[in-house]
Length: 449
Image 1 (cartoon, helix red, strand yellow):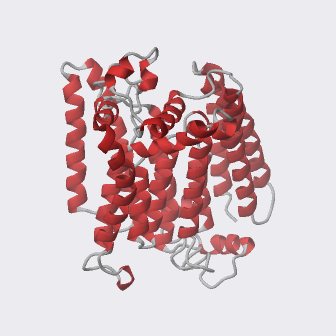
Image 2 (cartoon, helix red, strand yellow):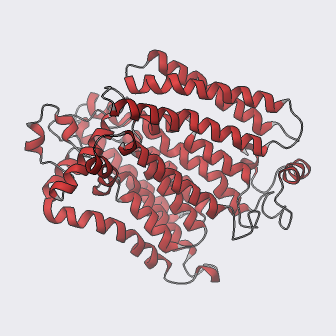
Image 3 (cartoon, one colour):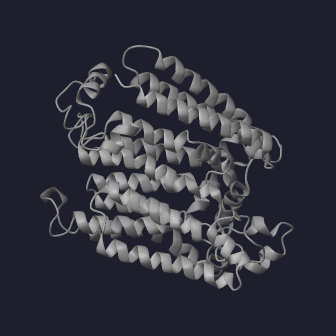
């Protein structure tokens, strides 16, 4: 029986423990330091458990899953909850600015019908940065609990970011595990790749840190994953609803919506399987339009200027204050240190978008797995070239590449699909047959499982 999965677990947990420890010691952000101190106590025991499992005989998948769940709780849920409790009791520095912005936008949405302030009103605030809401109108929904019930740990926007992302991940797992009553179906992903995807989403440091301190990007990327899972199951209306919900939260989801549209066109075009049916792209676009229209049109009807000042002007660096997203990535460096960079950086971003669109047109994705790679590449290009950017956006390619594994596994029909079809769902049987069959059709998936 191969120890490769446990060795990868050990390496990941060990490296994450070093990252968490370094964050606790050297970061200048209070919330990040708090996360690092708590998360170190989660990653290190997880690494020790991986060492113990390495020397124990027998099937290990279920025990690896228990360690993963424990690590996710220790590095994501527990630090988030502790910081939310301290914040509710009046301790400062227990949340990043985006949490305050989302909660304030929820209160404004209930009070005025718009989650935005105009630029002149923002300029008059003691802290103008906190007046900007650079998100789509739908993001304000996560601030409504605090607006309705006041500041408690359970009304903290981060709690609902985590719950939304977890619900999407559970839905994606159920979709990718195969049809009803057939967890090892021919079109289902194996448990190993799915476990890797869960680790990438809830245990990987950049994601765990984001959940605990900010969190607004996590439901967006989780909804993209759910949309890809629906696309794999050839359910275009549901895929459109999921990616439309993501697009109603943040502009970052719109490029992914374009990629999935190309995928839908391929899987429901003239060469599509009979199961796919016709009119798939229309169903996808209709699903996409519902959440986008439901959240954007009412706000645009009452406050189009607020939307422009916050989402468009501020996002392009033309607000009354500069964005705090200033990681030294290529787009930021060009915008700030190259003559005329404030025009060159957006031009480079637009040029990259045109190149990617051309490549999508000539070589569109034909599976949800290839669409996940397209999304990861496109969003990586975007956060590298945006004038206002931050290293935290790395979570998008991390999560999408993590979910590429089960998506690819589901498409390829690897050992827990085609090779194990008809066998009982038993950990020992699966582990033994993995050892006997070796690498399946998707060698990259097999290596990482």
